[in-house]
Length: 505
Length: 110
Image (tube, rainbow over all chains, first blue to last red; front, side, top):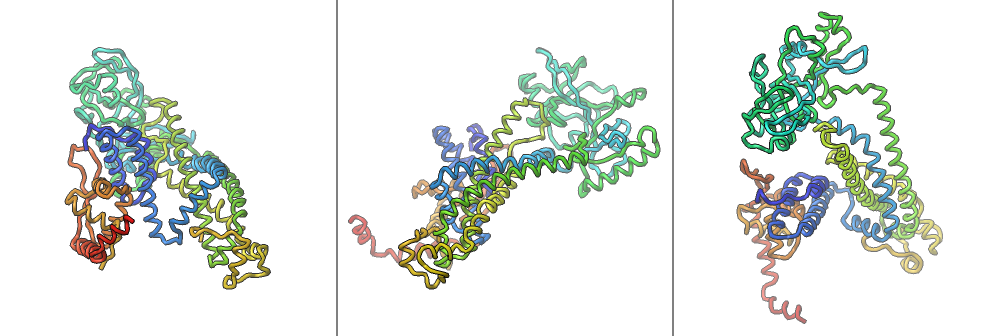
């Protein structure tokens, strides 16, 4: 493919990655992207290319899903799904109300879990789940505390659970190029080990190295991609140029790739040098993080850190007696959520799910009304040999089609709203690793909720409607008492009861 | 003998035609160009996946060379067992249609 050709719009790519799933999903998405580029290179308009992309995405998703569904052998068939879709079209009012209720209810039920997931994410680096934070927990203040540089150096030498340990201190710096205005940027004083731990290579030049940390070493800076683009005009020969960081002249030694904004939203990195011996310790506090060693779990590292912390506490009870050293997920570093807040959060989650329950209940009532109108058809189907299980499973599928459509609408709305919120907050307001948009990990629970909604809104009404339906309806249609399936009189059916279509049997 | 449906036969003919370059999009475009039939990428992969399970085709995944833009692609290749099944299906159809071409045209036109 031509590297200069325009890529498909991100909303289309996002939709494809969201709904196309299965072992070959990656290849299908690659084909969709190649198809888009080919269409555009052949002169197709954006609208036409988007239409083809969308049609291929939807039909591919159905093909892959149907293939998996067939493998499950749940007794459902394509005609059942087609019938569900036909019923949606036939009753647009009910469809609109039900989709609206569930499209609000399903995302509302997911918001708390989605937020938790967003904050519990791992850093977007190679084996990012192994990058963890080390912090002190202040038992008196019941909150996290930074670690002194001296303690960091001690931990770096003693903790064996880590492949590498680094430290940083974030702040705001004025970057002044040789020609141009000063601009405040978020940056970090970081140890050279930071770049080894994160396993990210610079786009240009080199990262910080151990020699940069030595007292008296020349002042150097590594710039972020955005700072390089906006402040230095994407100069390809930027390495070796001099910029002023605050009052210090620094040589630019490297530029990091786009998207690298460790630890929060930082755009420049200067060496974190050891403090002078007479420096007050309180000003040397740093955030400590590291990469767990191979086969070392977070709990094992935490246990080792706690042991070292206890020794520090016994050696210096006045400064460390109230501290407990702990290892936490990097994205939880500095957070102080206690058990009360966790309980409150769980209750919020429960309320959100109750909201979904109310929406499902309302949709269930609508479907029950529809099912009641179709009781006679169900009776005929039962008389012709359809089991109750078969009828109920079809009702479930009908409701599942409805709730899946609603879930897709709700997820798309949620994604748009999340994007708007993130845009309104402005760049740099949130950590670079925090992504509020809907991902495949959110779509999975949404589909589970859709299935749950289908059970409440479809199966329950169908069970109620089919309970003794054959007796009552056939009785009212002119067949007195019980009408066994084998003695079903066709004349009665033709005369009084609407026959189901082939797809409904 | 392995039974092959119409779409599976079309797929296998396309794999033969494309040689070593038979991957999803290429197969899709080949089928569209020759039969006018629009098929989804998903349908192609699921069908080829089933044919692979039956040992009629094999696949290999190729990642773009370093420095090139693109995602990995899955290329398919016809196995001898697949070639035999396709030949048998094609022979059966030919035998069934033998001598009926003019009659078919006559009936179709009216």
